[in-house]
Length: 376
Image 1 (cartoon, one colour):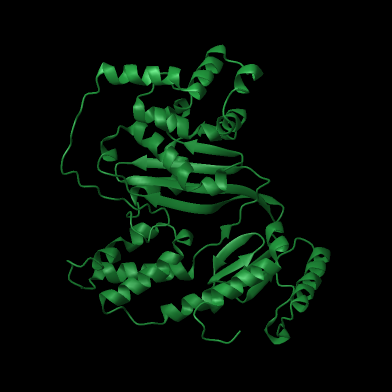
Image 2 (image 1 turned 90 degrees about the horizontal axis):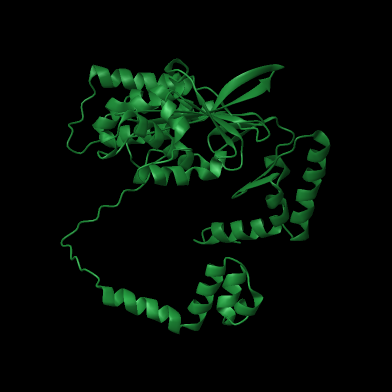
């Protein structure tokens, strides 16, 4: 395929995914445009897979350049990250190029720097707190001026990028720990896991998220705020928590009673229903706020609900220009009741529901489409 064609990358990606469809579904092969990454847990499996990939490429008359190939690496640099079998870190060479640049002199330059730093925000503790004053410079109504406070924040953010810690890659065979905390300023959550490293159990961080609350939510009481944080964290981290066993660590006793609340109000009932799917896998543990230093700070230095935030949700504004209220009379409801009696399928379904059992003699009288839906 010649270079320069607009749809060439997408066409190539579809083709290469089709060639390695079975291997991609097995989870040991990663394809990023022109990069093919083979992952293995043992040396024997790795040799077998390395032999399999070139064979498939030869079958479709494709060639690979050995000069550009790297074999048997324990770590890999990809998309600005350092990947290993256990952790995720920042590629230092990429960071060094940005750190050598002079102090930003315009809003565009500070936006570019914040965008770069924001890509690695999951590695930086208190990122929102450090970058808060710099984000204010991006406001169109704000005059660009690098004060002493902003220069200090800029330097601190650069140092944080240089010394950013590695994040653990989750082991799905081990339980997780989810720390949550909420306050009037925002919501915060930290996902942890204890893994065996150098023959010792070590609890490390997997992911940090934070977010600001809406004006209506700011009026919630402390108990409701903590329950809101629980629902929010489960929604944001569902791709980590779905189907896994985990402990929920909270400093609020009200969260423990949310699942078994007998007379909840309307929005508490909605929250109660939304977390039922985690009931069998989630254990709620109450601990004092001293053990919540990871999520405690995130809630008090919450990120703004903007596209830069990994937990960002678009909020649509709906302007109401008028409301029309119409009362439905009893005649309408009587007509609805009569229509159920006249319609054959509705009448049969009503009888089946009243009997609370499957009656083949009745269900066989349903139309084909209704019968298929009933059988399902």
